[in-house]
Length: 281
Ligand SMILES: NC(=O)c1ccc[n+]([C@@H]2O[C@H](COP(=O)([O-])OP(=O)(O)OC[C@H]3O[C@@H](n4cnc5c(N)ncnc54)[C@H](O)[C@@H]3O)[C@@H](O)[C@H]2O)c1
Image (tube, rainbow, N blue to C red; front, side, top):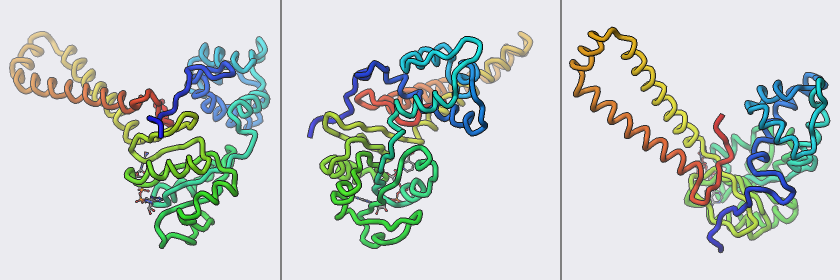
């Protein structure tokens, strides 16, 4: 098996940069909400705010789709929903298998949001013989022995891995050998896949680490601002009185921030520069 990562050029063959592709689901979510409220048109500023994206970036992103909007009117909501869905391949039904039906796998199986976005859970698969035939989210869990047949019969190209980390690579290899070419990995491990297989990873603890880093920085800034607001005499006595303690604690805080920042950014990129599926806000 090749060293395995998702090797993708920064720009897709049809000329849409990966960063734009990563923002398309954000636009689609905001547009779907507008469509549900029967809003006919939206300005780039309104849509950018709803999607949490800068409006100049949004206009640039939409230019890749050939969508420029109408001056003074904005973008046609329904047409943009169609365009983005088509670009993301969501105008067709995607059968998906979930492998590892424990706490997380069962929770994902019960999530209703996949179907409305074009993803049909075709099968739930687990290695535990005691699970076989048990209903989860209204479907019987199937055994790993049947994985290859299930994938072929259902034409599955997307697999979700929610097994323990130690089993994930082996599960991944079986999925790929059976014809799966896209994997959403929840297990906390880096998967090796051959050229042509896409892996997206989701790790909520990494997102929490990034938030912890920002929380810590906010707390540090708050303490500095409070100290700066003190009258000079009080500031000096505050510094004198706590010089050792504050020196130690701020040194520790810096070290911890640096560690959190490094961990978060290293983990976020992955060794191959792969970006996790969940993007920070
Ligand atoms: N990405 C995240 O944010 C996130 C959050 C929570 C959990 N996780 C990860 O998700 C995974 C599952 O967590 P969980 O709490 O659901 O665990 P769990 O133990 O409840 O479930 C794991 C399931 O995988 C099955 N399994 C084990 N080996 C298998 C194999 N070789 N083939 C098929 N099935 C196999 C087990 O029988 C079990 O049903 C873990 O790796 C965990 O670290 C990730």
